[in-house]
Length: 469
Ligand code: ADP
Ligand code: GLC
Image (cartoon, rainbow, N blue to C red; front, side):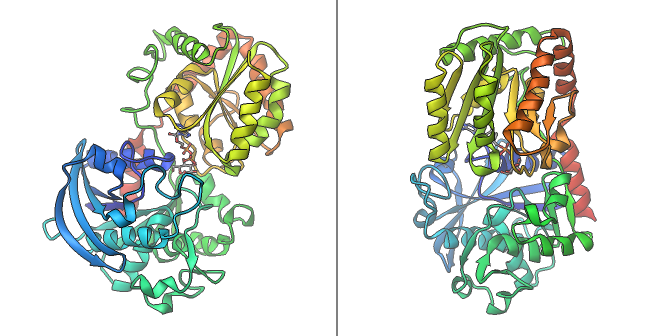
């Protein structure tokens, strides 16, 4: 089975969030199961730095200008890379500039990614031939499903929704520039409230749609989580075309036994006590008192409305009225939230540490060093930090939504609250606090969490079954 993934991120080459973690692991796990898997990505500067020797294999003259197609192999994974400096040679975040302003030419940048991906799936690289399945991820790759439909290529397309909130909306007049027929600009097509929606292109034209948890597959058929697309999603669900497959953990990257970023490696049974070394290191780094008995809460997150950091901010003064509790945040995103956390750190210098920015090593150190990882999301397609938390014996405190509710067992592998407000969060936190005072019971929960099986092999197998079907 030949599978071509199209995406805008892939760890460790380029990452802004969980999408990258998935693309860094799923194709690899599928290859382990015997599939012939390739991934198409833009050749951003960060990618070029890690893969300077990617070989040019073709020169494409497209609606978005000339693109050099390169190929490379990275840790056993075969990649196709779009080298086009005018589109992708931008440092930092792949979607927006340092002021959080989307690049004005995103429509061409990601239409080009989709077009090249679709062309490759259709057999552009004659040595590889045509793919059996094109697997497009999120809005950046959505148009690939439209191209395959328009060209009537005989292959199957799967579109995975990692986040319905980001839709890739652009002015309608771009459509014909992108080599797509104006007939596609319809309700039964990729039109969305008078605009072109790259996300809807994926949802409408893909043969099968998947989401990254089962609950999210249901939630997005509801008005509350459907961003106006719930009608289409209900229809696709009724056709049996909407499936939820929970993400996994890449044990090469996220395992306390081997993690190179943490103070001391540890494991579930014999060396769990060494987890405390990571706690001390974290406390030291943030100038908090080095004390194993303090309850240390952590959060690692993009700071956006989705993640509910504001809900936690509202609850924190009550939580921190207990001097034996500490909190450390690693996050970046909306300036108003960053500033609020910076103020919190200034108000509670003995108890709170805040690092605003993006730092892969530090993310591992928080996840290993914390006692509890808080994920209070308003919605969460899957969520990975709660999975990582469990693998590291750092118990998740999460809201019951999307993949959070699907992965955390309340009172057994973590703590779950229901309403998106500070009251509910605080109520669940009190259960955390009570449990913390019973070390044996806490350790039991840690061991249960660490024993959970979130191996990618399971998810990879489910995708392969879907392709086969
Ligand atoms: P999302 O993709 O919605 O941001 P996920 O929980 O699926 O949420 O994935 C987030 C990923 O990004 C995790 O690997 C997490 O460790 C990482 N991450 C989030 N914020 C930061 C940060 N500020 N620095 C480093 N890694 C981060
Ligand atoms: C998105 C979602 C997150 C999910 C990730 C990987 O970024 O917000 O919940 O874990 O994609 O699928």
